[in-house]
Image (cartoon, rainbow, N blue to C red; front, side, top):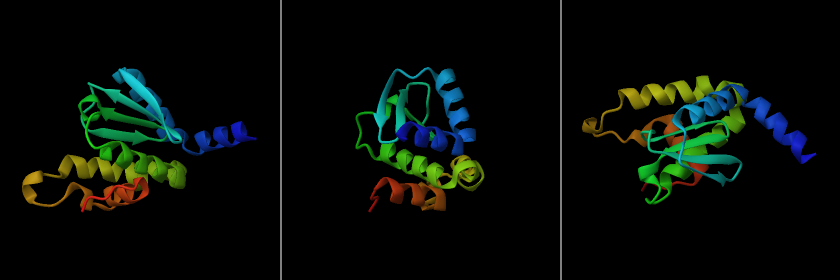
Length: 128
């Protein structure tokens, strides 16, 4: 029964899971670990982090930091579980546009945006 549930969840998140699998095959990460219901990959070819369904990819240089990036990205993974095929439109695209537009010189926290604030909350990340 557990396997059936896992297949159903994978299908529920199919668009982002396929994109995540494609990105993993392109980036060829050096390390990977089980991370709750997701798989966490570290890649030197990645800048920052991204979560696509069950695939979390984080820059290798962040591996020895506080772990907040990994837990933040896990929060995005949980958003994907909740939203299923709507994740890419409700979270993924707005998050990518925010990341492209955001500028640290504007004195506005990157994590103020709704997708990032929600991911922090779901991942248990406290930025205070």
